[in-house]
Length: 166
Image (cartoon, rainbow, N blue to C red; front, side, top):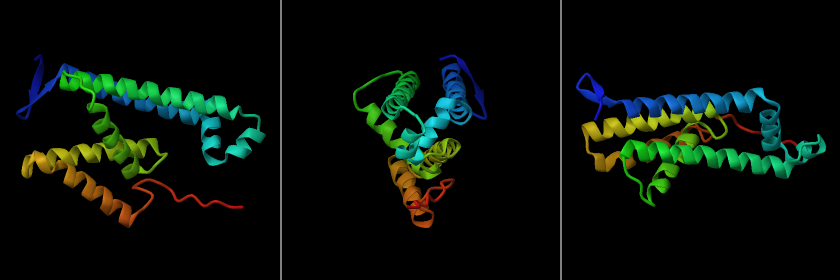
């Protein structure tokens, strides 16, 4: 394994590539959603589907595009996970999806930077849990913090409360 050591931690070039690709994709998604016409239409659709349709947005096509983008990003995440663990099996997508959902809920649903912070928080909890207690207890730490955050702030760390007006 090629790479280098930092404070007795071995970091491979594949890990650096995975982190760099993750940041690049996160930034690209954020810029797409917040600085393009299609991204603005996606956000409008998420807020009020009927109003988006009245404004001339092809709702069905935009939903298809959104699912396509989400599926493509999930495929890239699966490839990166396969590169990280150097193996692929049918069950690994479930665990990755559960972690991604937990990160999104922790950060606040619909908040891309919040999901990133939620993902880092999960990583730190797993690392400290495995280092100080046992790797068998990492899920307990992660989901315990998720429950605590949802009890204190149901919208997640960076989520905003949505008030629906009639």
